[in-house]
Image 1: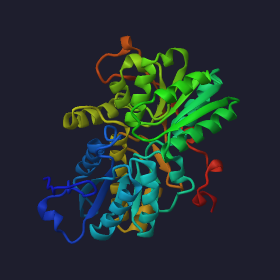
Image 2 (image 1 turned 180 degrees about the horizontal axis):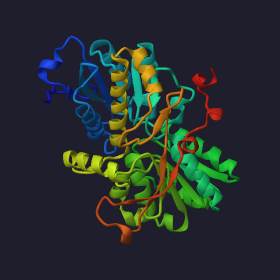
Image 3 (image 1 turned 30 degrees about the vertical axis):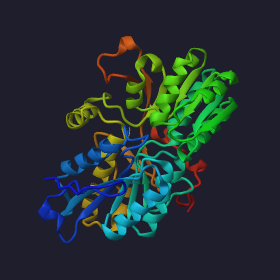
Length: 400
């Protein structure tokens, strides 16, 4: 049974748990703090909430005998708003898990708050590799893609294959900066050269001047280090200029919905590294079909990863026998990860989920069988190769 309260930006909605259970003395409360209306809302938004909701439903609506409730809120991609919501959720609404945090600056802002209040934060929608680097803490986990995973394997492969000069078109916030920095290190390690770059603010509508700078650089590869609507406008406007016929684009933050929105013609052949694709095997297709019936389209990466993260959190509560934070944290580190989204995974001391990722290629138009049949899995990348190695991490938990 669903119960709802009217909400404005920053307010939450009770989504799971019957009315009678909502008044129980103790519940497990999960808060999805995400972008509901901004530049990332298509790949996060209501799908992120429903991914979490599906996991709670599949767990039977309770864990360790405690009813589970779900709330969500829109952080508007503003760290101050995200911080205020996280504080209120924990202090006033008794939220136990804050998750999603679909923007890196918002995630980083909330990590310290959650640690200070000794609750749990699982980042699924934000991507800065520094979430489990310099900003790591014992209460924080990173469950989805990150900038090292998105950029290092792809940039290294392209550089080794002869695409050895790069120009970066980068979003001017934490996600874009981390994505570019991780890619730069890998390119230079492989003998490549960075010939230039430019940064743009979030929600830019006219990329003309940035694209002209990329064109004049004569770089073989243009590293597009942004996401969501910004990525779509970058690729669409670049295609209109004919830029991609003379130079190639590496879209580090690409997602399925972006390909569909931009169009196969403009995106064919583009590679990216993904943690989830709906049509990869029987398990992912079964989950996707359930999500599809509820949302009218297959799940994006974070939608599916939210299902995995909530499933594992509830398994940890069950294993601990309570929602006590210290006991749950131990279980999250100790338990193996196995679900339809994450078939095999382990959690490192820095909170980084180590799992296989997938190198995916955007199909050619004549290869597409139906609307959402956009990607082909080219190869699997083992987790120990896909994520930043311990030797390169700034996380103090790994150095203890």
